[in-house]
Amino acid sequence: MMTVITMDKEFRGNAYIINDQEVLLNYSGGFADLANEIPNTIDTRFASASMGKTFVAVGILQLIEAGKLEFEDTIGSILDFDLKQIDPNVTVRQLLNHTSGVPDYFDESVMDDYEALWTDYPNYRIRHNRDMLPLFIDKPMMYGRGKRFQYNNSGYILLAMIIEKITGMDFDVYLKQNVFDRCGMSNTGYYSFDKLPAKCANSYIYCPDTDDYRTNIYSVGAKGTGDGGAFVTVGDIVKFWEGLLEHKLLSEEMVTQMFSKQSGDGKDPEEGYYGFGVWIIDNPKGQDYVYMQGCDDGISAISEYNPNNGMITVMLSNYGDNVWSRMRKIREEMY
Image (cartoon, rainbow, N blue to C red; front, top):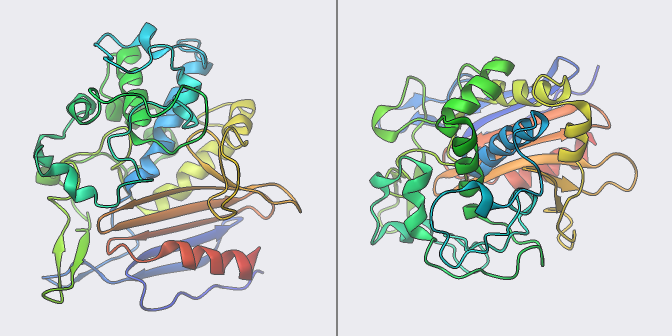
């Protein structure tokens, strides 16, 4: 028996840790609906921001395994719209591992206010990947393709559009049928803010001037796109990891590639390296730790798999609480 983990009661959201079917932590705190004081529960669905990039990566890797796509295929040979100044020779691999250099509509190295994107381009217009194109299609390349690693949101918009081009399906429909349904993730999906299903938490932003909260419905796109925005539950994220590890989604060989260092320099030991759709923390004493994460206004999410002890951790907050500091603590105590 492993030690059962406790969670500090200030955390607003859900935290779930499992090891070999043994639940080490099952925590819910805070309100899914603050005004009506409806609490978060184990089956609350949370917006997960960039965590959705991992799902898109799996979709692309599935198409590669099916022989419908190759790592070295170029965006110019797949996509049928004018790429303007974007290098048509950027490859699928470079999009997957953030070395493409394509113009990022939200360059996190120089921007920190995601809300500012919607000043001139209303967020309610964002319901498909193509709706994101005006935010970056007229910008120049950030650097030459393949030159270096730089986390890139636009790259995953283009990957989702590649899924749509090859399959003839909206990317979220493809992911539901080929990822979520295969894993039994019945509570996961890409939903519009004006048509949310039951048990979806509002995401809240603190307002220091009035010392209260507002929701983030004017801060992010009206519906998730290839760079993120899926609603998930902690239980479904565990099912996703299990689906990968039991090779329901990809072959063992492809999962190994996905979980291997593909880019990045590891200068920030916590952020680490990048695989395909996942972050990787170097572990000199064993197998590397693999995690996915997301951060948006009012949203913070992290989920990590430790292959050395089989532990899966999921933390989702609809108040943007610091899941990263709590993940550090779990690593220190449990790894």
